[in-house]
Image 1: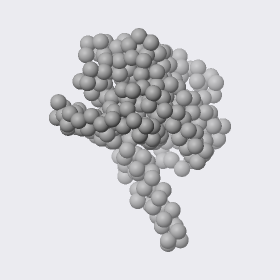
Image 2: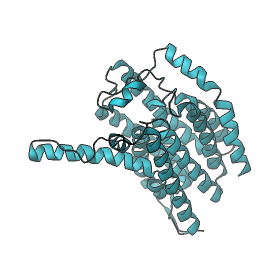
Image 3: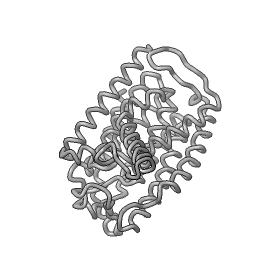
Length: 326
């Protein structure tokens, strides 16, 4: 525990001073956010804010992850690799968005093909790490050995949470805060299971993301962009699979599940009503879910804090379920 806490502090202290330099470097290269035309009108004032700020935590997470994989736990190579490939995928999406004045970026149907292809490779890599082929049933001491089934399971979670964190990245501090809460919970679960390397990797990520939040707190001087959100979502999914506690991921990552489901339901209902009634209708005022609350008149900081609280409570429930299993 002391080593993990020390790593959180060290990662934060070593990373946070680079934030202002990164903001300057991004803006000098014209890497400022183009706000989507179909988002809330109030967000247009954020246009030009430095994006791709996820590089601030991605760099130390990858470098520190390599060190941990070399000297503590070789299975962490999969987590490092997943962050790198999904970060690269997100970087391409960010660059596409910068070229599009409306901020739309890479079309989802093309992005999904690459997401699933890379997630399949991550799933195979996890299969090759024998300790990841298990499922620890919540609230019990039972362990199920899955074999090749871990490949589609891992691929699904990588794609789902890569997109879930990305969809949550719409308000200052929202995706970063809820991600570090979920990663912190998995760090606790890893410690409880004796997975020291995994716990240290979670601690490293928590400290680096905290450093990013220093600059992403409202009003944000940088956004993480897809390079950060895709990498974080992939890392969270791989950490969950390596821990064997991936059945708890929909609970621990409840905010990301809600954000993703809100978009799926909104789009599906709109298309269904347009086909049946000739006019598309909506369930929410705007999706993802955090935009719905904005349309109801909630302040951005209020939404972010309440989503953090929901994420914290969901994480505590996850720890409780693990504790009941002994």
